[in-house]
Length: 439
Figure 1 (spheres, rainbow, N blue to C red):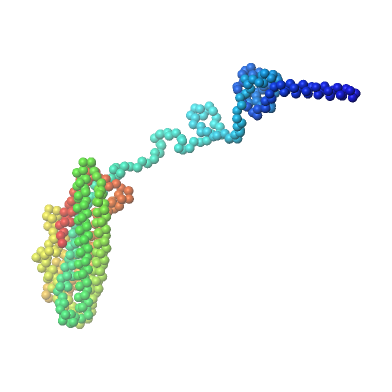
Figure 2: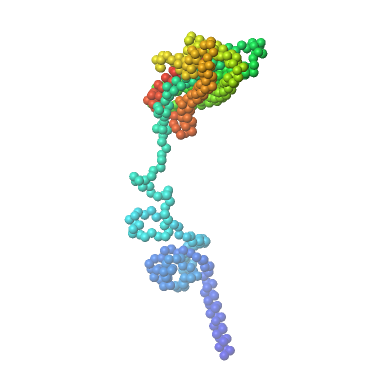
């Protein structure tokens, strides 16, 4: 039995030697890791050992069984060997991307929508125009949002109110100025005055100063109104002649000039209001002091002395009215509203003129009470009305409001030539009326 084992081992060694020698006759090629073979032909698809898995994916040397052992000559030839490609790392599988589905209604009826489709954004949706569509508001051009004649037109008849206001304040100044002028301010006579008389003299001097300051502020306001009428007259006249069919009402320095005039009116209106309030307060105290002379019999002499002051005051005023003095001789231009004197234009001046006719040398209690009523009621009320008339001239405030709206972008300053021509006449007439009031 030992001989049989020895013979079998010798046969195995001989077989191994012959196998190793046959392998060493040709080159040994290292195995290729993975490769992508060329497309298989129909004949190759029918080779044994090839399945559907091999036709879809690249086969591997480690997994694909060999059909037959190639000969050394075949191994040395490269015509059947696949081309080597560099090894590439396999990318991770990405989730399926969701795509937008813009299919027509007909295609949607055939193919049911999948869960991968998403609704398109508003910016990607097709725009469909229809009568019921809500279109965005398009900003209107500034030219079509411009001014018309009624926006800038001036009511020339309102200038009459300014005339009446100036007339009332002129009357106040003349009454208190004449009263102060009639007082004997000689040092010797001052020492003889009692406490009530000295209080009346001081009050009248204060009334004269406040009335003069109020009149000065009123003329400053009137000057600003005149400047505004000249500016609007110039601007509207130039636009009405413009060959382009219109123009900007506040072009150039016009807007700044409107703001300057408005600031001047506001400042002087504040001064006027303050002086009128002082006149009212001072008159209230003055009348209250004079009325005290009725309480005591000893004050009758003082009452008659005050009466003589009134007589001299109203006689001086009557001379101004009858002679056509500079104060009461201011008239409107002939052809507009006729020749109207200040005495007729001012209700206060008319009341003063009526008292001038009533005052006589002989003391009259009725006339004395009428003069006190003038001081207590008519002069304060007329001064307040004059203040309100001068500070609330609507034409100036309307133009200032328009300029503010134009500057803030709410309105356009563009106005057509025809509209400017219609508004130009009113400002020209207003300027003509205001220039008739000369100081």
